[in-house]
Length: 604
Image 1 (cartoon, rainbow, N blue to C red):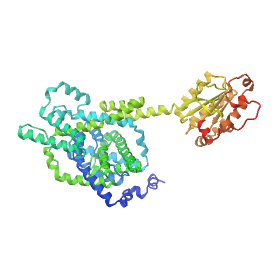
Image 2: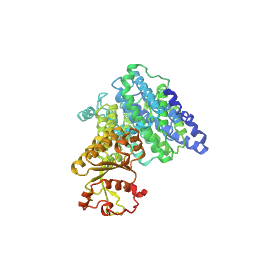
Image 3: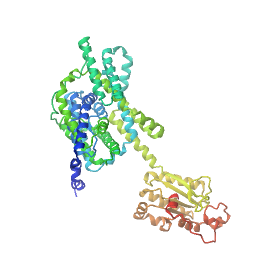
Image 4: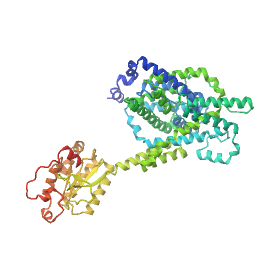
C-alpha cells in the first residue's frame, strides 16, 4: 500500500469537509449570534491588521488581506468552533526578523518572500495534519511559549521606539542597539510625535479598562488621528502617516518556487510552523474547555495548512490562530465557525469603505497601539506562576526569553524546544528508585518507604517509578550498585514493577544482567507486579526465561513466601528485626492475609 493510499484510508468525508458537521446544526438563534460576533471581529481586525503588517515589515494592506481569505478557509476546514485565524504578533515579528536580512521591508521582493514563507508553512502544516502528527506541538512546552511571547513583546516595543518618539534609529537595529541609541540620543525625540503616541496609548488603556464594549484599538487610533490632524492643520506640524490603503479586495498573488528561496526560508518555515500550530491548537483547546467542544488537533493542522496555502495566492502572509480575536469571538457569543467566516467577509466590505481614510492615520498612533499590544504579550501571571513552581521550567522560560531578544527569532524557538526536550529526557532518564519495607504497624505489613524502618539483612526490596528504557538504564544500574555496596549481604533483590509502564530492549537486558549477577552471588532477582505490557516485551525477547518465570509474581504474599523460603534460615535465626510476618511465625502455617485485594495491591 502506498503512503498516499495509507493516508487516504484513514481520512473520512467529515475530515475532508468538516463544515458538514456543524452547518446542519445551525439555528436561527445561532445564526444571529454568529452574525453579531462576526461583525464585531471584522471591526476589531481592521486596526490590528494594519498594526501587525507594520510589525512584519509588510505594506499595511497586507495585514488586512491576511485576515480575509485565510480566516475563512481556516474556519471551514478546522475543527474549532471559535478559533479565528489571521495575522498575529508572534508570526509578524518572526517574519520581520527573518526576512529583513534578505530583502528591504515593504519592497516587492520582501512581499514575495513573505508569500513564499506562508506557502511553505501551509504545506508543512497540511502534511503534518494528513499524517496525523498533531502531537508534535506537545514538544513545545508552556514555558517556551510564555518566554517567547514575552520576548516578542519586548522586541515589538523596541522596534516601535523609532516611531513612538520620532527618532531616526537605523532600520534593522538589534535590540541592544535600539536601547543604546535611545539613551544616547534623547535630544532627537520629536515632542509632537511622542505626544500623539502617548495620547493614543493612554486612550487605549482607559477605554479598555472603563469602556470594555468599545474596541479600544479603534477608539485609541481615532483619537490619535484627530490629534494628528489638529497638529498638522492647526499648528503646521509635519506628522508622518500610514498613507491611504488601496480600496480593493485581496489581489491574486503567487509564491516563489525558486529552490534558493526555499532553502533560505526553510529554518524560518519550520520555526514558524511549530509556533503557529502551538498557538492555534492551544487557543482551540482553551476555548473548547469553556464551550465543551472536542478539538481534533490533526484537523486543526489541516485547516491551518489550507488557510496559509490559500493565503499565499490571495496576498496573505503567514496566518495562525489569534489569541485576541478568538477570545473576542467567543465572548461575543459565536456559536459556530460561521462567525469567523462572516468576520473575514465583512472585513472585505469594510476595507472597500474606509481604506482611503488611512491617509489620516499617524504612524505614532500605530506605535502607541503596538506598545499596548507588546505589554499584553507579557503574561505576568503565568511568569510568576512558573517562577514559583519549577526551577527547571523557569530556566527554560528565561533562556527562551533571552534568546528571543539576542538571537534570530526562529532559532530562539528551537533553543527553547531543545532545552525543554533536554530537561524532559533528563527527568525520564532518572526514574525514582526507592527502598520499600513492610510496615510493622499494619496487620498485613504493607510496603512503605519509611527509612527508619528495618530492612531484611538478606533481601532488598526496591520500587522503580518510571520507564525502563535505554536512557534510564545507566541511572538504575548506578542506584542498584549503590544499594549493593551499602549492603553486600543482601544477595536477594525484589523489584516492585507496578510503577513501570514501559520497558525496551535496554531495560530488559539490564534486568537479565541483574538476575545473573544475583544468582552468581547465591541470590536471586524477583519482579513483583509487572504490568502486562512489560511482561509481553520480556516474553518477546526471551528475557523472561533468563530472569526466570518462577521469579515473576503478581501477589506480594506469594512473592514473599517464595523468597523467604530461599533465604538462609541460619541467619534468620540470628536476626531480631522481624521484618516479615514469616519471621515471627517460622515453622507454623501462615494465615491468609488480605494483601492481594485491590486496596492492598495498590498500597504495595
